[in-house]
Image (cartoon, rainbow, N blue to C red; front, side, top):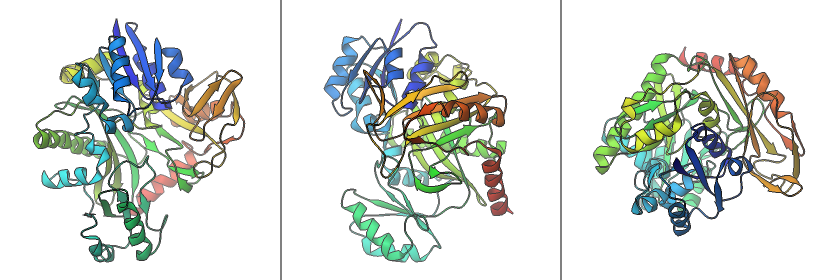
Length: 436
């Protein structure tokens, strides 16, 4: 038997747990911030605690004779969980705190691409309290800019001119606000194009891409409303996206491979885990928006159910740096993921509201921010449950996802347009107008 420690409590980790458990010899032990009903059912034992409580995590791992750990979210990576487990001889799928800077420090990543002359950077500049006075001059160079705090913000710290602020004065004020709690702020030119996620597995030497996915950050249909953690996502049966060519995916993968090499040159260490690149196709080709040091949520749900290769074997190969010997394969199917969220999400979500859920006949269901009580399921205020449709094409997958999503009763809503022909056509017209 292989004893695996899973750290994380969301729908992403529910999908990871399901995939690991496809291996009949896998025993799962899960450390969660809050109890996820799906992960709990798949686990031999669970422990609820804080991701910053490294001693409790180490004790839980030692008690259960863990062979390796899989780290789901970014918070434990930033807390140094991989380093703590390494100290007691347990390997992890996930980078050390030093290398997790790929996600936790946007300035580290931008400067890494610059230093090693890797394509993909937009025009940018890093500011701190010492050069704050230069911000106005930088803003003057561009029509529109993006402001990013240098550090973790739960996916909600980035502000875009035209969406979240309009004037230079507002930009400078937001930069000052960021610098009260962060060491630096990054200003970048705003790129126009279509975004996509390319989540890659790596042992530091070999980099393997999973099928590209497009996420939907906006809360409401037709891409309106505030940004969220992600309302849903889709992937296509040809392992491209409607607006992407093979060369585009190849270029994004090439950037990630070069970044993995650069991390090794910079630190002398090998990055083992997930390198999830948020890319954008522009009139000037593929550009890098950011890297995450873990799988995306919801994007993990699009790729894991399609994985044909044993995931435990992939993880073991990453640990011993033999990923190049494994043929990682995915089914040629389309997927559509839709999140059910509380009314008022993301700014003023209802909390502690009971929901009724029927297990869908078709499609998959992954629990996220719910609390399982004796009398049923209650929402805790964030994204509640993800539903996934898998089909031979997008139309089939979207129909399954939509039917499954409608099985939830309560004070909830979801984006009905994710994966639909109308929205995808709009995205394709957008990119056509930019490139032509």
